Amino acid sequence: MVADGPGQDPAGEDARITSLEERIARAEAVEKVRQGAVEQQADDGSRLGNRVLAELIGGLVGGALIGWVLDRLFGTSPWLLLVFLGLGIVAAFRNIIRLTTTKRPPE
Image (cartoon, rainbow, N blue to C red):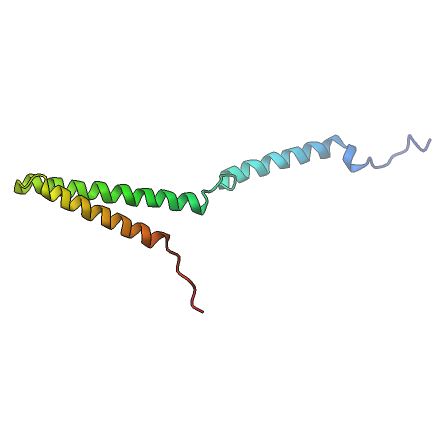
């Protein structure tokens, strides 16, 4: 008779509780994706590497392009191209050195 009487089932065995927990887990996962919290962020090393590569390519291409245009304009081929390519390389390495040196906090 005691077994047939009313009473509460343990929480872990109730199918409604299990279903609710599954729905909450799915909703939390969807919310994390919506907020962008699931995306893996790039670490500082890869960010710095990409920046160094961009500085190097930008300096070379920028110097070569400016030198080539000035050579075409003044008819001094290939001298201004070589000069500005050298200046682009110097500027690129200067920027790379400035990026990679860390400033020490004042003591």
